[in-house]
Image (cartoon, rainbow, N blue to C red):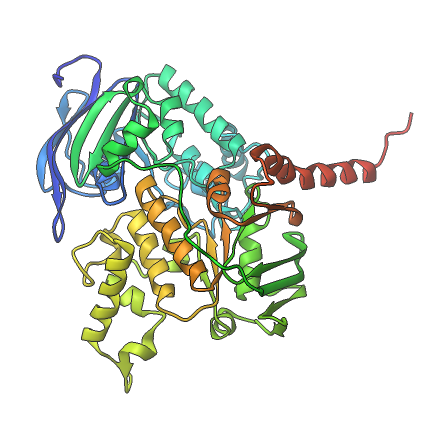
Length: 517
C-alpha cells in the first residue's frame, strides 16, 4: 500500500533489527488512520522489538519510517511521545513511590507561583482516571500500593493524556479483570472515533477478533501475514504464528496423585488474606482463581515468607509437619519455590546474562572458594535453554534483550535446577504466546510426574480448567469454594469469584447507619 495514501498515518519500510542475531528482517507495514491493527506472533517473533522501534525506544538496524507523510526517526521515547506516538509496555513505566496523580502528570505538573497546585493536579487526575474506569481509586494513592492490574490501567491513562495519534498497547489485558477489559475496549472505540490509530499486541486471539480490523503476524522476525481480521479464525492464526497446528488439549501424561505435600491452615494477613486453608497433594496441580485484588498473589507471598502472616500455619509432608517460614530463605530451605508474576521487579536481573540469572539460585553448584566457574554456569544455563526452548543466542545473552515470554522461561528455569517439592506459580504464562503456553503446560505435567506439588495462580479461567486437578476460588481474601476436575463450570467459578464481595458488601450495608425519618 502506498505511503501517500491520505488515510495512512504511519508506515515502516524494510525495518530490521540485529542484536547478537537478527530479530527482525525486512518488515513492511502501514497503519491507517483510526484503525486497530492487531500484531501477534510467538514470543521471540519480534513483536515487542518492532513496537519499541516505532515508539522510539530502540533504533532499527535497517529500514526507515514515515509518520503523517514525513520522515520519522525518533531518537528517544520522549521524542515519539511529543509527536503523539505513545506506547503502553508490558513492563510498566511508573514510579511506585509517587502518587497516581503525580505519575499521570509527572512531565507536566500544574503549578502556581512555582508550587505544585495539588487541587489542579487532583482534578486533572480524576478526569484522566475516569477515562479508564478508575473512578474508585483515590488519585493520592501511591502507585506501589496498587495491584498490577490497576497499575496497568494507570499506565494506559497516562498515555491518553494530551494529543495521541498512535497508541501501541503491548499485552494490555494480561492482568485486567473482565470489567476492566470491557472499559479498555470502550476506550479503544472512542479513540478510533477520534482518529487515533492503535497497534494492539496480544496473544489472546479472541480479543483481537473483537477489536481489530486487520492483523499482522510475525514469525521468527518475518512478517508472514497482513490481512483483514475477518479472513482468519483462531486456529488458522495459531498455525501462522507457530508454523504448525496446535490443538486446545494438553495431555498431562500418566500421573499418580499421592499424599498431601503442602497444608495451609488459617493463613491470614490484615484484610488481604482471611483465614485461608487448603492442601495440595504430591503430583497435583492446584489452581487458584479469583478477581484482581482477591488476595491470590498475597496468599502465595505468605506461603513463601515474602510477607509475614498475622496468623495461620504452613506444613509440609505427610503427616504434616508445621514449618517456620519467616523469609524466602526459609521457604527455599524447606523446598518451596515461588515463580513471581513480576519478573522485572522480583524475578530477574535484566542487565545480566541468561547464565547469571539461572545461576542466581544455584551458586553452590557452580562456585568454589567464592569464585564462579564460568564453564559450569554456561552448562547450567544451556541445559535450561534447551529444555525450556528459550529463544536466544546462548547463555551469554543479556536477559533484557529477550522477549517477555522468554524472560519468564528464564525465571522458571532457575527454579527447575533446584530440588523443590512445592512450586508456587503466579501467572506463569502471562505475556507468553499460545505455542509457548503449551510448552509450559507440558513442563507442569512433567513436574507432577516427578511428584511435585504445584500451586498455580492464573487470571485465565480456561487455562486453569485445562491444566488443574482442583481449583480453589478466592474472593475478597477468603477461599470461597474448591472445585474438583470434571465437576466445575466456568459460570460456577465466576460466581464464586464474586461471592465474597457480595457478602462483604451486604455486611457493610447492614452495618451502615440508617438515616432517621
